[in-house]
Image 1 (cartoon, each protein chain N blue to C red):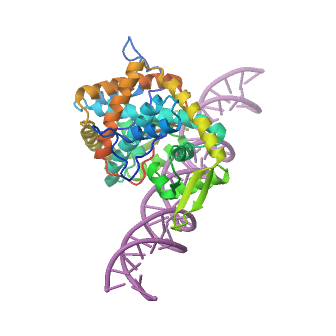
Image 2 (tube, rainbow over the protein chains, first blue to last red):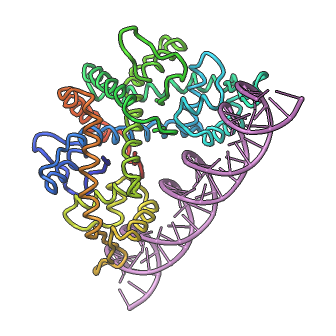
Length: 188
Length: 188
DNA sequence: TCGCTTTATTTTACAAGTGAAACACTTGCT
DNA sequence: AGCAAGTGTTTCACTTGTAAAATAAAGCGA
């Protein structure tokens, strides 16, 4: 289901006691249009999508001063947590991006001196990618900053609720991983 | 934080008793690299992003046979649940898209006879958008189909877990809506 | 009334992603 | 050894989104 925003005007107060997120408003609208539709998926999926959008927006904003996109940072992170060099194909699979996109991004990261490429001695088709010292330093500096910011965003939820959320999301993710056909690229 | 995929090879079995989602694997990797980092945000945000990506991918796939993109369907839905015609600007705000993107999408929907445009009599700058009969019929047919598919995807979780997830996500979303500056476009 | 500011929407220029094609290399079989 | 099939990566042609500029219309104050 889609995600939308509450009306700009004075349509905010829903329940007189509590504020409501935009998905609640959207569900209310749909109940008027289709009173007999089961809207539970909107309550879950709509909120997942909306939270994702906002969280990604926040991550983008934090990376911007360093001239890094989230996708590029994703590549840096993937290389940083890997115990060995990765091929372009592995990076594409790990980051759910197309080969073409990865090629372009790696090019940019190479130009910025953050990533290094070597052709595999045994198979000349294969590129082996590693972080440069600068790339590693950047990743090591940026990740904790991102995590701090994200921790602050999550602190709006009590710890038990956060744990619960992680648990339920983990269950859902596991199920989705088994249910949704592996599409070529599904970064998010 | 970013989202990635488990290694392709035989790295799958984590805990001997239970399968694990990919975010679990990523967290394990980071623990080896940075043992003292608080990875809680990855557990929540990484999973939100990954679930969102998979769910969006599934939604895209379902809309494809009707030559509809998710963003276009979002516009149709927004018009369908609205009690009155909406302006292009309102649609942009409701769908968290830029005015330029909305203009392009509306053009396509108009060409397909799904959306109708009238210039406002009182303010000639303003476009008033409504669904055509065909547009409404399509929305009314497609939404339940999407919801059914989504309901099936969520059925991997027990009902109480779904309710809990919706609740926690709602809390988080409400908090994020209040914390993250309103960026121009943050569709998801 | 007039001129300046603001507003609604579209157009423009460009970046970034995609699927498919291209290219080079490797593997496997006869 | 030679060739067809398969594989890894990049290039290509195109689509789609963005920010900013452009255009037309409205609002406001002197």
